[in-house]
Length: 89
Image (tube, rainbow, N blue to C red; front, side, top):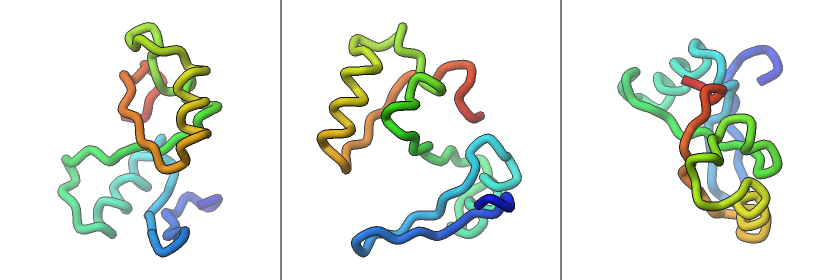
């Protein structure tokens, strides 16, 4: 991943393909690896403590701290948040 390539990472029998979400060429490579339509949007996984970098909490009824605490306590929780202007396209 440090060289700009996607990586397959396994954790407890679940595997994911990860890469730099800000690099369109990496995102396209991930879509090709997964045999997905290039027009399809991929989910972005972000560390709870850094969600404010890509989410617009002014458009959400809960604070960054509340969501980060929820995700930290419930490790497999996915949350869909309104994107900020800094979110990957």
